[in-house]
Image 1 (cartoon, rainbow, N blue to C red):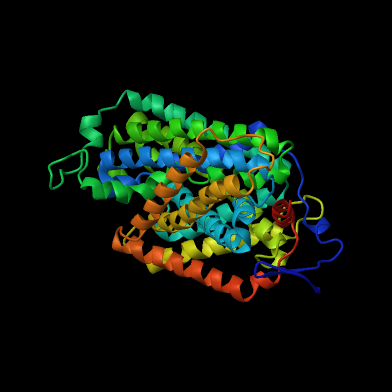
Image 2: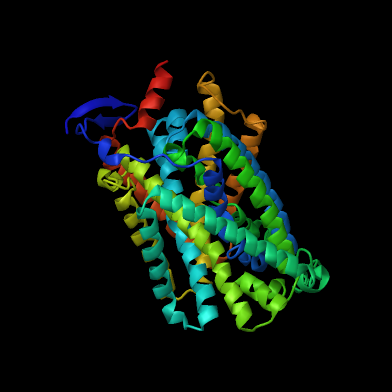
Length: 485
């Protein structure tokens, strides 16, 4: 490769004639597939993870935090619904930032999102292991084996092809939603908000709604994010969608509406039945606890809980898809090592990216498990994933504002009705959540600092190596061309 072009402190290099042919994707998805991809990526948040917010803020604290985070995701999703069809590239968030803020903004955004998508499946796979251990009665020492089995199975399914991947996504997402509906209906017959949701001891101010005061609301913010985290992955499927300009906004906003209903129904009904908010706050299988209340502890309940693992599987599978495309897009453009973007010759799936993300996510989960922290492994990983997510959200909403100012004339098939104020509000809430991560429980503080060091190491790598090896990928060509015009 020879040096071809310098611009904005980075260097673009020439590539082989068949470079992009060896990095091709296949179009398959319509509105239904994209909706299932967005909802499926998040639906595990209703099965596991959100409940740790009950321990951080009590029922009232988590309820308020969920309302605040819902506002943030509304501002974010409407902004993405405008940007995605205007810049329909697999890069997604990186693509938005590249056109708005240049190569450094693109890399920072992409690196933050990469942390989110690598660590989120690790959180989910811990949840899957918790459910399977409770169902089959296996010891804690078996947990890494359950995790490995999940990674091997669902990375393999994603490698098999986009058609197989999307068809499985639709089926498993619908099954997960059906399981939630069964749970909601059954929970209504046992519901007692005062007895179960408010079973925590009153705080210093005597409040059972806010046993930890407003500090509990802030502490619950990262866990409330789990009801929505990863809905923003949909633009990563742009180059595998038949008509992203038409379908992407519809899928994002329909997916958000679905998730809002799921979030509040799950929070209120789960906490409002036995064993209550206090017990759920430390459980690795909160929905299973609810099913035992509704149906008893017999074999039928265990079978139903086994089916309930579908919710976690839906998210695990779809976020494996997401990190594969996210690593693919950044490596295709040279921000990450280029060999990570080579796709399968027949199936056109990013095999190297899928395998690399799996190895890294599993390694982090295993390391935390072996260290034996006092806190649940899933909760520790969750805080690390949210660290990357909120940085990504801040850069995406900032990109929305900058694109409105700097590129007002690009084709926008959809325009956000919330506009710049909605993006600014989402930016502020994401920034507030980022601050709370460093003020939370001491164990969570330590892992978030570790995530920050990982992030800093990524920035150093780009400064020394990555910025000298960029390629004129579609995201780069669009950004350079739009600003020249």
